[in-house]
Image: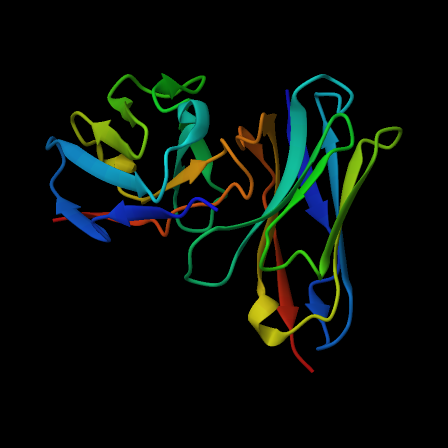
Length: 118
Length: 108
């Protein structure tokens, strides 16, 4: 059974850096083709794809957020970490991590709501 | 960068009816790497279809995906009460792997 769970702060202040961790089980991020990505959803709005890291370390980012985003993996801990710098109230959203093959999000975490407010 | 446009924005139908949801890409989707997701309030999205037409594990047969190139369709043959939700398409043929803006399927 594949499971993913997001963890991190629920409240951050403007200009701060957000660090979210996705802890997963049921698959290996060393298996060819596998990737773990991050998607967010502002309240009442659509899904927004953020970033993805593949089994071989290849990384992909949303062009509109690339200068603020970083994604990394720790295969020994079965974790993927997303960092978003210079947080703004418009970054308030539920952040999801998801696992899949070749970029499709086949399995999702439950999501974590992050609010940006002073 | 591939941009996906979903239509209609809202679809009002009754249980038992057939639903047809559209997803149009601004350029051809590589290898027809197009997925559909269903999202219910307060829940994470769930994968329905990948590769434009392959149902994910456990997805009922009333859900079917079709299309190629720039035009894709998700069809729900006979709506069940639990099918009323928001549906998103996503292309994963070339990064960034963007989503469409969603179609809300509501009970008429």
